[in-house]
Length: 326
Image (cartoon, rainbow, N blue to C red; front, side):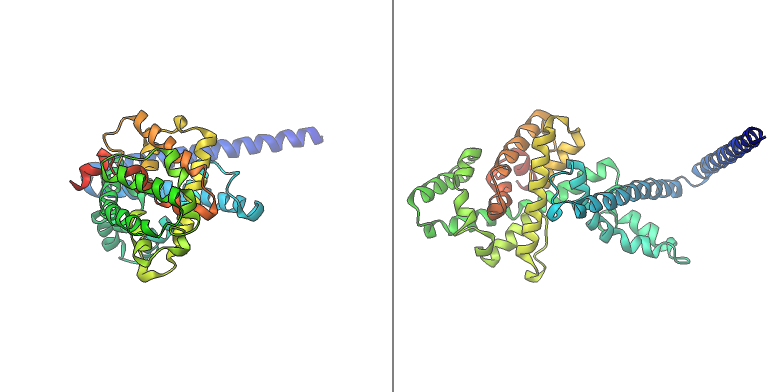
């Protein structure tokens, strides 16, 4: 008798599941046909709808992933990110800023009648009001190039800040090595990674430790990394956070291998580190990131300043950067 009951119960469940699937399929078919009708009658409106629909799905997926990664980080010893993958670290670093950026749009949209104003404004000004989840592939490249062009305006002032402190270097060998680096940068070349690492003591103590930089030096360093000085608010702390996340990603690159990255991921990594990758060959991007990662692997918390200056030390004379400002 009990077997018969179990059979009947399982049969009912199967019938219910089948019925649910049919209802869900009919609903999707209806939505699909409805979208086709809207596409024919209101093509522009549907374009906006798709941008927000697809973008919100991607954004929501990354927010859920961020919550999972944040939980893993909290459970790790001292909040370390060393056990996370490169992609997880990137999400952990980026999503809080994205949430802050799109919050006004997401909060205002459900209010009565506001969507008639919010959607067109967000569509007209996507760089200012939306995050990358809502951008097309071309927009992502265009906006990254615009930001890189602004950052490049502060490379030369940062280079001048480094020059201005040379005479304060007491160690003759370190001063000579650093002067050689500056000479190469001023002559259209770049120092080798070993030459950069050799002057690490200058960035872990006087004169270029983050605690010892002049205010104008910190401001230029912030702008080189796409950050605002914000009237001097938490400059050192924000630079430290930036260096921390970049270094953790670099260490993840070394573990996972740069060769495993897609073309979009390579471009994003180059943009983040101050190099314009547009029109660069894939192997050139890989080689440049390998050089950066080699420096990063020799940096510790006391020498974060060295890593933060690498956009100038490794990218000051890169042809793809020069194209944007000359």
